[in-house]
Length: 321
Image 1 (cartoon, one colour):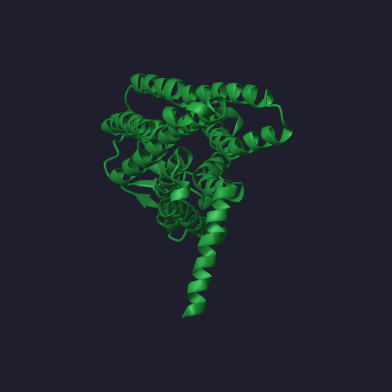
Image 2 (cartoon, helix red, strand yellow):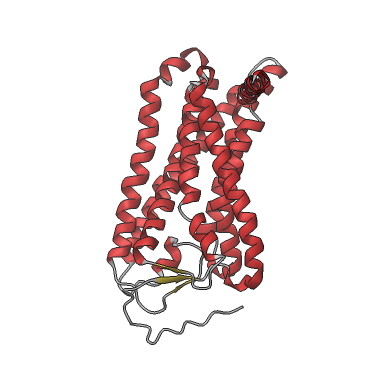
């Protein structure tokens, strides 16, 4: 299906609201998509909140790995809540409008959370490196202060850089069509609407991707080169299995996050359609935050043990009532 932009004049500055075309091409099937996404969104909130509560309530989980996991779960709640509620509303209404301020707010949340997650995943990889490659010095290397500094640096980088980039983007005039062929205000479709020189913003965007998205990714790869090298030197097969199991959840989350992100932002535009772009973005926006808590709970004996104990205590209380 093609979309026609009925705005008179390509150079007319946009000062009112914008239209998120989103999944309009689905027609009546948008109701079905609404139901599916609503269930996934609620499950995402419950799953990540459950992880946060379990870690906070049980002292046995007060370790660096779970400290970072709490940060990741909180980040995922914010990330998916930045665009999914608006999408759910738009799937039910005819006029899929959003104010320029609302569009900017969406971009702030999604870009900040996305960049922060890149840095946070690198911090989690460093934690696994310290635990496996330097087990005798682990408590010293990953002290509470160091963990707080790594998490704080991740949030600082995400907030400072993306507030600067998004503010710069929306300080420039938007012209032409009011239609954004996406379900949320992402950087690429909004950049196409700017009727001013965007070369400097593009340079900043390249700098952010190269140093603060791919940089952490390279750090993760380097960490796992050392981790795998150390694990392969372990004398027992059981020791190697246990060491690999402590890293498998983090590796799966890294592959899921960077896989969808790289396809979304680095795949050549000529090889994709608008519909495919939106599907990949949907995977990154709602499926990844849903799967992350499942990966860490279903594949982690400590979390499963704490969860089963919590449920058993709950059942015991109910029996006594």
